[in-house]
Amino acid sequence: MDWGMKNRLARVIKPKTGRGVMLAVDHGYFLGPTYRLEEPRRTIGPLLAYADSIMLTRGVLRTSVDADTDTPIVLRVSGGTSIVGRALSDEGITTPMKEAIRLNAAAVALSIFVGTEHEHQTLLNLSQTVSEGEEYGMPVLAVTAVGKELEKRDARYLSLACRIAAELGAHIVKTYYCEGFEKVAGSCPVPVVVAGGPKLDTEMDALQLTYNAVQAGAVGVDMGRNIWQSDFPVAMLRAIRLIVHENGNARQAHELFLSLKQQGK
Ligand code: R5P
Image 1 (cartoon, rainbow, N blue to C red):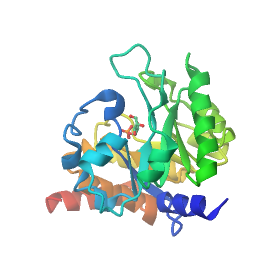
Image 2: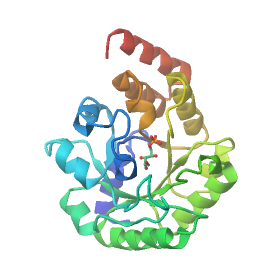
Image 3: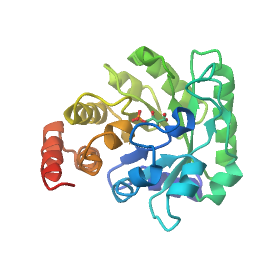
Image 4: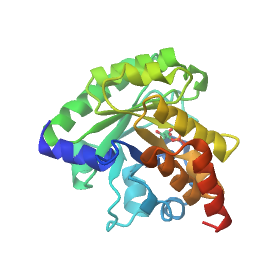
């Protein structure tokens, strides 16, 4: 692996712990003004300092993040669909590699939709992006998307999707936590991070998910709604950091959350 690729990867997965806390705020690319992400700058601003990297589209990056940030950017480069359209899986590449480089991205991210009618095109999107990424030293994060079919999130399906992503050259894979996650992480030869999915009932549920995922082999999270849909998003993000980077358990992280919440943070 060349120096540029290694250096960019080290900005996303921190060498000190071998783990990473990525903040996902890319939801608007198909969901529009998602609850509590209606005004991206207001959501992102207070969280930026606590995220190892931030995952978003070029539009929200340019409009809602100041260019003097030192938080690494993971740029979403796939899309072209909407929640009210015909098929969420019908994605293309929306942002060229050249622009990702111009935006000083630390990595690019795109979705693959294994098992859908657009499996082939989204897998070729990944392959093509990896080829370009290898040329320019840009890591590629593949998101094993399930669209509206949340019930797909089991170890059998996710192992299949993650392994295919790695085989096609993804440098990091983002997937969902599930029962039997050891199989998912263990059969994927590149680092795996987990999304949070729709907001869970309590903060403790999301912290437990994070802990379980890391214990089962995830190198961290690329999480959105379970952080910024909390009433105390900074406290939540800091609690997640405790699990990912300091090997805290869910209870310790929850205690930190409660204490920060009490301080109004
Ligand atoms: C899909 O909308 C995006 O790739 C999100 O970044 C991803 O689902 C992670 O966000 P969440 O933790 O809210 O599921």
